[in-house]
Image (cartoon, rainbow, N blue to C red):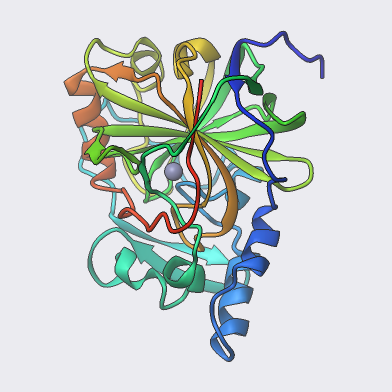
Amino acid sequence: MRQLPPLAPLRGQPRPPVASAREGARAAWPCASPALVRCLTAALVAVSLVGCGAASLSSPPSPSSPSAPGKAALGSRPAAPRSAVAGVGHRSFLWSYHGRYDPAHWGERYCLCRGGRRQSPVDLRADRHVVGRGDEVVARTLHVRHVLNNGHTVQIGVDHVETLFVRGRAYRLLQLHFHTPAEHTTGGVRAPMELHLVHRSAQGDVAVVSVLFQVGPESPWLARLWRDLPSKSGQVVAEDVTLPVREVVGAWRGAWVYEGSLTTPPCTEGVHWLVLKGRQTASAAQIAGIHKLLGDNARPLQSRGARHITDER
Ligand SMILES: [Zn+2]
């Protein structure tokens, strides 16, 4: 499709090539046999990832899914279940943020969740500072097609347009979703909400643009889109809404950039993260309403290890 003029330049310096999520899983696989075979299989065939999972986003659920679209005013329905079964090929698995299948237990099935060395989220304290042209957000608008409650988060399905360029490689936006509270922290401080825009290149590389929210004026695009929300796990609400990208991600004020992982099982590594420094605002009622649906769905902070975090301006 026609490439649109740059909207918000994302600046940076050349970095090593981003390994694909699949390559990252192979390179950093931490477990020994026989767990290796079981876990590798689970990681590579996972097709029902949620949250930051990229694989699931390549085939978004149809708004005409057998799951009857349910609509609910924001915060007016009971909270969605805090765990859900997701199909993985011929298998099924269970994970959640609380109880028996909470993040402390993800590693029992997904080795990278326990033994990975480049995991997300992390506390963002930059040790490199770069000024220069790097990545770019190029789309002007997002066309929202549906909103899905998958039991772990509320996911916004969009047209798969090219919205991001990382070192000249085009990435298509797959979906947006929320975490309450935020997963990344900045200098130890946690924001009340974080939006993830998950992208994938034609080569399979995954990049996530993250937007942190703070309490303030109401978010117009949230107000427009979230008048009706799927309140139950598995529900899909059809939408036909066009959103200006600038309204969603805000003006460019720099970003923390690092190499990490999906923040949900199978915790696949090789994910290029850009956490925007410019905060967006949403009203306390909006954030509370989303949290009422999601509950606490933030993975605990992971060790930064020897990784660098770059402050790009
Ligand atoms: Zn996420």
